Image (cartoon, rainbow, N blue to C red; front, side, top):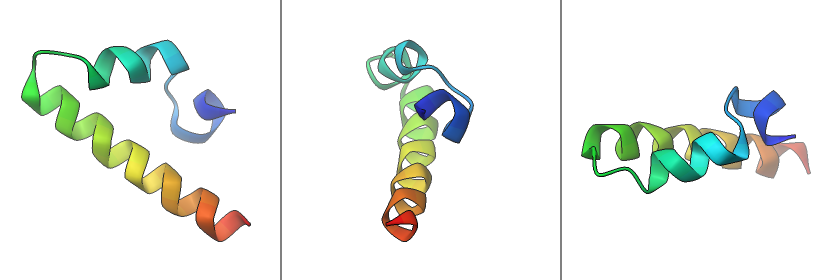
Length: 43
């Protein structure tokens, strides 16, 4: 479900959020915030 919604697998999200690269972490957080907003509106 996550992969279909945001284009990243759960493993990619986990890796992105735990990356030492701050830009990558920031980008992944933005993607997750967008997905969270989508889910909130979906309910």
